Length: 144
Image (cartoon, rainbow, N blue to C red; front, side, top):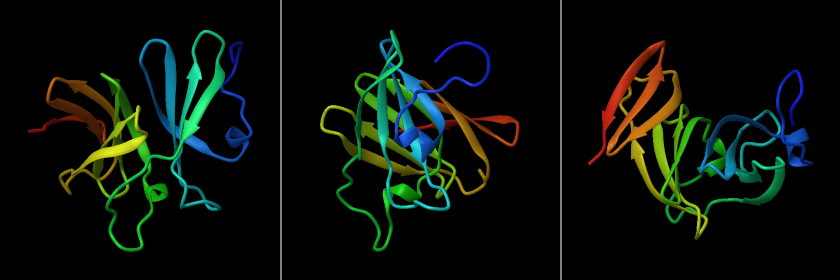
């Protein structure tokens, strides 16, 4: 990590998987893998200590109820934010916002987003309000 060029966390998985979103709690940086041509089944959250950019851990979140035939690895996370022990992530596949509780390493909730959003990028959380970028416009979403 560091120097000129693209930053990277060097891991074995890093040579095989890509990420499009990250979040930080100020001490760690969290990343989420996206599907590629070789793997559409695994969804991995990685955690690296920001002090030295060394990988500290990885986990595959547990999801209690998925639709038949679906895998978490189909999610294409393009925005993520950390707050109070949870990661909030938006997936442009399936227009979904998922809440990942880091301590039990599980999906706590999932919310469908409006179908009008077709190119979700980025995520900002302000209380119960989320902002996403969709086709170069900021869209505000209110969660109850």
